[in-house]
Amino acid sequence: MGIGSLATGTYAMLGVLVLFVILPHFIPGYYVGVLTRVIIFAIFAIGLNLLMGYTGLPSLGQGAYFGTGAFGVGVMTVTYNVPHPIGMVGAVVIAGLMAAVYGLVALRARGAYFLLITMALTLSTWAIAFTWRSLTGGEDGFPGVTRPGFLPWSLTSEVNYYYFTLFFLVAAVVAFVLIVRSPFGLALQGIRENEQRMRSLGYNTWLYMYIAFIMAGVFGGVAGVLNAYSVGAISPEWTNILPSAEVLLMVILGGPGTIIGPLVGAGAIIGASEILNIHFPERWIMFLGGGYIVFMLFARDGMVGLVRRLLRRWSKR
Image (tube, rainbow, N blue to C red; front, top):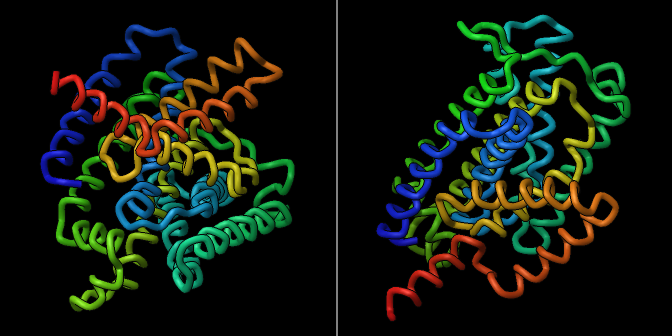
């Protein structure tokens, strides 16, 4: 991505964030909850976008860190009565440490083998969450997660919790922009384009990819923590392949390697799921899957790329 495209994407993201600030005052309460889910999964997708869109490493293992962040904050704050701020930070650290361990295994491979290894690792995490009943509740899940009460306003209100998650989205976007604009981020893009050439220039490409892998896990852990508070209960399925595939689709559909793509992809998939589930409750997954296929055939660079192409054609007229 060029500097101009990066700046344009940053300004577009700022515009969308401003829209997100005012939206809760004009929509019914139910849709505030839907937007909260969009925000949480946008944070989740930002992490994968760093790994996939900027480093060239598509992963099916992000659900492991999403679920670990959720279970981490749940176990610490509910089972062990740890204060919420410490529990939140601790859960994200645990997710990051898991990514550090899993990265040592996954980064031994590239391409399809890397994808398969990340999938195997997240399935292993699901198996642990599903069978460790004394800690996670097993197939029954982990109920009773209450929202933080250390702030001057109550987060039991959906609107207040919406703004709480929006704060984390803004922080995630700022961190992401700083990363991709830094020499480190430029090196990641060089690795994506030609890893062998970057290695010949003296870069330790494995270390760069390893750090990006851990960062993606941290973003996933943050999203998992926020989702646990949002739902109030945690399922072992959060560590399974479905959230990993869902966030991968969000990045692909939104536009990998773009600033605003993760938010666009999260909004499109969650919004389409809500609409189709209302109008076609028995067949909505079939319609959604068909829509994915058609879109991928005609817009391989995602929705952001499609808009860019249309704007270029319009400007030439």
